[in-house]
Amino acid sequence: MRAVELIKPFTCEVRDVATPVATSGVVVVNVQRVGLCGTDVEFFRGEMPYLLDGHAKFPMRLGHEWTGTVSKIGEGVDPRWLGQRVTGDTMLGCGTCRRCRSGHQHVCENRKEVGVRGNFPGALGEELSVPATSLHALPENVDAALGALVEPGANAFRAVEGAALKVDERLLIAGPGTIGLLAGLIARSRGIEVHLAGITSSSIDFAASLGFAGVWHLEDLPALEWDAVIDATSDATLPSTALDLVEPGGRVVYIGISAEKSEIDSRSLTLKDVTAVGILSGSTALDETIALFASGRVDPRPLIAATVGFGDVASVLAGERPSHAGPGPKIHVDPQI
Ligand SMILES: [Zn+2]
Ligand SMILES: [Zn+2]
Image 1 (spheres, rainbow, N blue to C red):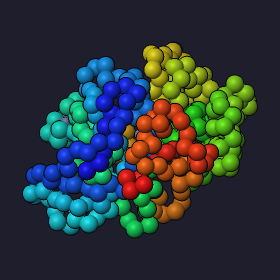
Image 2: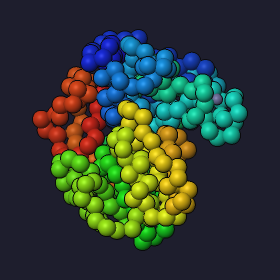
Image 3: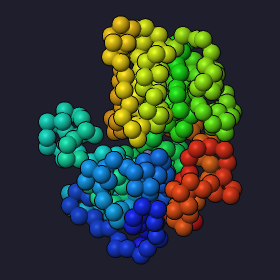
Image 4: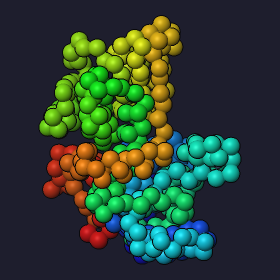
């Protein structure tokens, strides 16, 4: 089959590789759509922390936001999965340790992550093999594009849950990238007053086009009370700024990760009686996100700027925008293009 292999930093090649096999407990999926995200860009640039601590090494196959159809099943897999349209959990815990048994497999010490960690091949191939236990069925009205937005959507869903706001309370989201925008759409569907803040005029303009209550430049925020602040940026100063901005008694949610160490002053946290929440992965919210997309109450498809073929992955990861791209932050890949 054809697959995109990341050979070394800045070098991606479309190659013919061995077709995955459905071993015991495993299914093979025909991949229909794959989302590219910031994590993939970090790998492409050779900057992803897992490359430094040994959890990942080149060559690797990226792709952890995907939709496909189950084409083969291994021994012991429920035959009802055959032909089912699915997406899957990126996080593959060992299944036996204390964290896995208590529902925290996404932070299992020995986990693999599809297309990310433990050299588990990702979805940037015509076919993908994953454990049947990681599958999540997609209803008919969640199309290929929506299905590939479930993984980032579930991350955003958990960030909104972390903010724990009620109807008409006010949320500030720093960082109008895919996660920030998804969190904004999800929070708005709950009746929360959503504001976004960014730096670049193109991302601010795009966020404004989605009709949020307010979209601001980070340096030019209005003097409003923020009941919760979500940091969806990769700026090392934002965690501390979020804590400064949030109302006493409120919540800060940290989902962005900066390349350098970022710090907060725990005295502010205490003296303002603020709750801080960290979010890694959408694992525990995948089904709720699928249901939300299926309900039509949140439609994130305007975030997709373009859908390209395998041959364009390298240039997209290098930061080029396809010539036909719309203004959204997300690029999708279709193996059939
Ligand atoms: Zn991602
Ligand atoms: Zn485990």
